[in-house]
Length: 312
Image 1 (cartoon, helix red, strand yellow):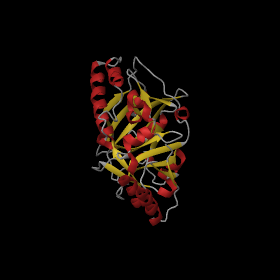
Image 2: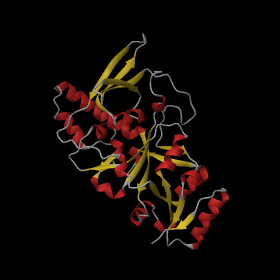
Image 3: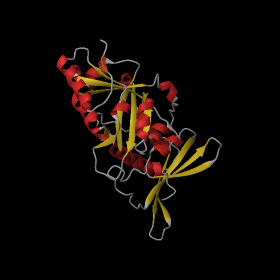
Image 4: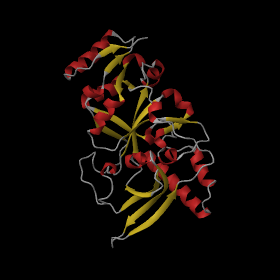
């Protein structure tokens, strides 16, 4: 297990516990841009595997178990299908129109960030959309239409369904909006009571700088939106970064961290609000009392974060 990338070890970190001794791991078999076959160990489909997609093609994932005699045995093999409908990824820099991120939240959630200095990451299966963390249907269809044997197709389908369930129950996300200005439609949708709610402005750089301090394996990416039929290996192995085209107006930037070993519905990630938040925006129709409430909260914590009234 020592060969496994430390960055994919999320066990025990949140509660300050030691890392347990594990008798299993996953092995990626991939081809790189130099036409070489490479192997990479991991525990989860996390940051190490995701970053490999930039210059590798995943052929298969092998689930391995170490026996008492310290000999490893292959338990299951999930192969990447080649779908009849293949779309290519849009480069990240083209998705980010700028470096500015926005988050629309209720006063209660904003107060929690300021008082407790953490971000509230939600498990994907706690989101309203029950398709969160599910790969496009065309990925499942690609298995059925592949040239695999009937036995391998059935194995792939079983492992695919299991992985989708695990992905929803082990992936925690915090969502931002990409834009160069305030979006009042999303503010109303996600701020609950938009007049008595908050919009915080940050940036990709600020967010990543804060998250790097935690040493956890965050994947921070703009969401890519698709129309069915849609298939590529990124969506097949990392579906939490893909959403259906009906959500395209959200222009979402998603921060995801896989957490295993705990029965958690939410994860609290430590941040410094003063370093993370560039400005605090209040609704143009916010009452004078509410404005004072926000100012007093920031002042009571000895923080220096600009507070402005959003343009109409």
